[in-house]
Amino acid sequence: MGLLTNVLIENKEMTNERLEVTDKDSLYFLGPNLTLRHCTVVLKVPARRLHILGARFIDCTFEVKQELKNHQSWVSASLKGCRFKGRLTGCDFGHWPEYSSSPGYQFGAIEDCDFTAAQMDSCRIMGSDPGTLRFPKWPCFTILDPIAHASELRSVKWPGRYGAAVVDELHTQPARTTAIIEHAPSIAKQLGATPEELRAVIEKFDCIVY
Image: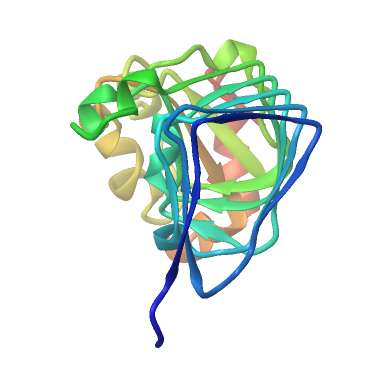
């Protein structure tokens, strides 16, 4: 692998522009002091090639062209009124300043965002009100306020290993966790269940939306 080119997008405001984050030989830094309004951001790089450093995104659309896995630096982004399309796995959004002492993480926020066109798996909302967000529908499902509802969710039998692997561990999530979004076919396959078996239990709980 050759040397990566650093692409620094910082200290500016952009409106109604299209930002292509797609070059496999580049390392992208969005921020600090970056505000995007009504922009389309096309993402087609692995998480390790994308660093968000306190950028603000207002009414933007994110088109995720390849699965974005384990991208935690969303929690240094301020997201308002944004829309997401594509596959997001193991990504965290919102306000979680304890995650990193790096500059920018204290500005993390999410509100009024729409994930209905995204496929999300093992994603979390941190330190923010999930009531302002629109989550993907089944076969994705979202556990709201998982720590507070942990004991209630443990009160029933879950299929396969989902109870032991997920439900029994909800109380160990970071204190700021306000929602967990799963993709039923993916997690069912991992934990020896079927999506239909999961749904039959999910339907019993008001704290799970699907």
